[in-house]
Image (cartoon, rainbow, N blue to C red):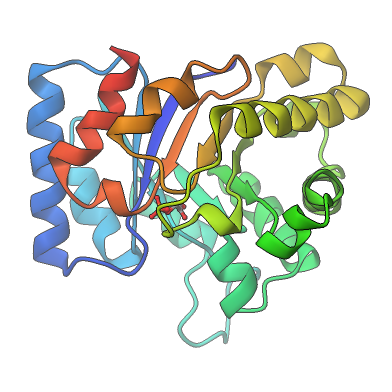
Length: 252
Ligand code: 13P
């Protein structure tokens, strides 16, 4: 079933103590104001276990921001999908543009990560999106289509149904420059049509597609009101409990 989701991506922010405090603050707010959407905290690996213990799993799910493309073994510094799962996290963010750009994650690597995540019972939040140059050249549709096809279209319909997509135009990430709600709707609807062409209308209708990129309390309501926008993946505005709640509240 298509869900409404507001997911935070803390990126490389917060010490363990600061992260636990942030999770506790979000948890306290939601204990008093039950969310009308699925709320996910995406945290660095080191926070996962403590954040899982800190939050009420009824209101808040937990995501890693990455996992390895190998199952186990001599890969110093890597964290496997099985390890993430063992913390109690339910989701894993994969394919974020920062990982693609700074750490050379290709579609082929991401395909491996998606498979390992699913094999270990984690639900991928799979990020796609074009850079400014591609948008200016009118190539955004072909870029996101290729990203989805190359890393996800080998999946069975059943497994594809476990994927949450996050459209994050790279030019809108951390820039304060949000896609307009019309731009977001246009490409979300396109992404859904690509899924429908491969898996059929029912699977496409049931796929959750989040928007990410300078999403904040002041623009969330309008973005989330678009028929093909099912919530948000939030960076900067997820680092303060009140700001993050301001976005969750868009669904109240
Ligand atoms: P900002 O909300 O800081 O623009 O980041 C978006 C993002 O990259 C979430 O994954």
